[in-house]
Image 1: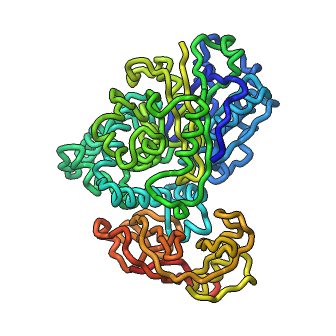
Image 2: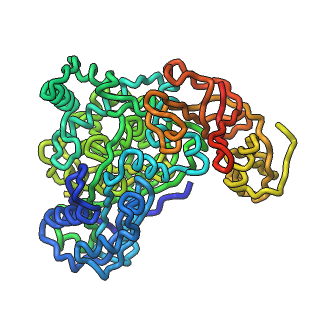
Image 3: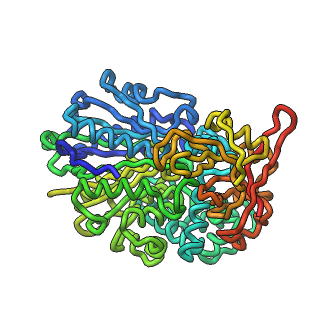
Length: 422
Length: 142
């Protein structure tokens, strides 16, 4: 495994913002990126003169398929008034945002630039469900995985089947992850699904009564989650509430060289570790219950940062499916293999638990505009670490955080470690 | 393992699919370290040798992971699969020690909790369409 070197010079985040996540029929990815950019600008404590920005890296999986628009980066730069600075699109499926962040970190660490904008944008809801399924499937190993009929829920469901067999987990255990992430999203005004599953269920009952239809007889959220009418199977053992939604959204963070951070803020968040790794198609891995690229990316990021999994206070992990959060928390070393599923059940990963995971609501409930998700993770830890996460603020000193962003079934993974020093 | 080998066809997805159309599950074997790969590889990731040869696999394996898909890609909908008629996709560990993605048949998709990881499977081929449009898909049957 290649060893992780340290950054040649320090990098800090001094601004972060995101658009509202959701389904917006009247907005394209450019409009969403403008929203995110404005939110980022507002967050820079000492104000931002955009003309100091020297380069843009933007995560975008497939505006080509979703919007019939390729060559996204210069259009996004132009939309926020930044041309003629270099604008580079970075694609790594659902890890596009995490990879763009890493490109930004490297661009500053190398000495090439002092001030870099990192963005992510994806507008997915212009396609119908079948169209989105087909578009996302292009992130797989198309000639060798797709003819088997696999979809993305299907891949993660196959991982879940192996995990259930090996560790005696049940589909109910996975529901705990969904319940927790919806609880967190209910406190996030930017989330696509800002409601608890309890409220969602009550809304379904109220809607049925209003339409004069027989009201469902769910008495608890567990009744609801076990009912095909409330929570249909998508790819056994995964049901609708195990899956992240189709989302439109964008996010942006401003990275600067540490030596210039005080021009922007007295409360910077330092990026002290960055790891990235790649892997084969799902079938080509020795085990289906872990993602090797995630473990390697995490090991490298920890090594660069000089910290261990134990030191991390909060993490935003890539919960495109509930099983993905369970596996992520094991790959990152927070829990031993086979123990991750118990953490959500025992409340360890809740906002007030020992290891809060996905305080934003995660991809599951905040939403998953694929190319933006990795950058939106950085936005959440920036806010949490500066005590600006509002109602969902984690108590105590959030001085070390981590983000974990996965492309496809784990053929790409990016992990970053963040530190607050004052 | 069959001894049938040929070096004529390139180690490509197109050649692999041509073999599938002939109802042969072929892999490539590294002539240096003897590891076999299906899907095929042109360069051995184990020893980095470029000296590969086609070999026909035994077609025997066991189920490593699976799912029952209720909402599939467009080409599966066209084959008649939907919420009322789901299908199984799986990952199969071949006797040769290589894993491959395939459709899984001969198991009831409506009773997923009865499907066992480790179930022995044999290679099978599913044909769909006619004439020029005919396509052959890799499957494994319980």
